[in-house]
Length: 414
Ligand SMILES: *Cc1c(COP(=O)(O)O)cnc(C)c1O
Image: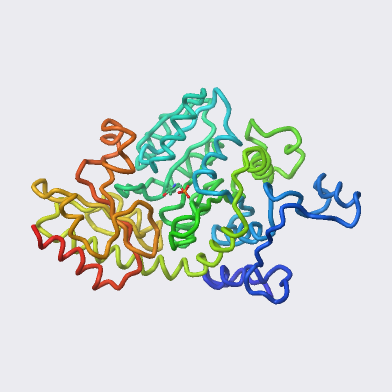
């Protein structure tokens, strides 16, 4: 297949495997289950180990099926290289394991995925300073910078209150100060947003969510956008310093995080994620359209107190979201009027499933304060703007009328 960078998002994803050698003409990259790889002679094997020749060594640090997915993700994010992990959390853990040391400081949005919040607590227990800021306000990020600041970490749309970080201004700040900018793009996915365009050096995606999209496989990825000059990063080990300055970060992450800690993505999972990814754009369009329709319906209902969705004019960062994202995403949250119990309301939904997870084809609902954000306690929940009655909805690809009717019927009980 001739390679053209002019193809659209879906065309590129669908045909990316065919840009390398086509094994038996297979449109899908085959699932290679082998853990080790044999060479014609020991010299060739040694060359592969020393990086003089390309090739795979051992499944923990690389696999052809996973490598094909990594290339697909790099194309999605317009990055130079990607690294896959067994889950999104393994990818976030890798940033910690591979790039941070005692005495460093990280600045992170305080509106965070719950488990990422927990990882940052672990970091601070291990001697890494943590500054949690309101990332919708770049002045708070700037005020938190110290000489020890190693990275600024932000999510695109925060879960569950949907705050939109001031992504572009934070990017400009990081570039001016030479600080690594890490963006978790899970909530928007590379179809709705390319973090490279706001200056992110590393982009994290939980592949489990929208990219795989069907709630049947776990995975995570880090993409290097090629924006960050690693020669300025203090913790690159001597053997990676020899590489091109734009490759040093990924080489260190592959060795120090993926290889040494071993949270590798299986080739079977990589295949399943690659198949799911083919329809990412179609699903995101449909989910975003469904979410907007549902958010508008809920906002106009007298039994609903407030709806949080970046697609609504009432959302504090609506204009920003419109400029940054192709659509407003699949996630919304809302509060019912105080006299309605959120558990009672949820018990009347017939289609939407009471479940955690997001970015699935099926609509999922959850009372967040009592479940996924329970462990962090009332104070941290208050900081994140999470009240006890908040309901999160991950909107699926169901027919719009059916979804609206399901929520309409449940509301009509009160
Ligand atoms: C789900 C999620 C993660 C973690 O991904 P897993 O694949 O579940 O480990 C990280 N960040 C965000 C924003 C998420 O929604």
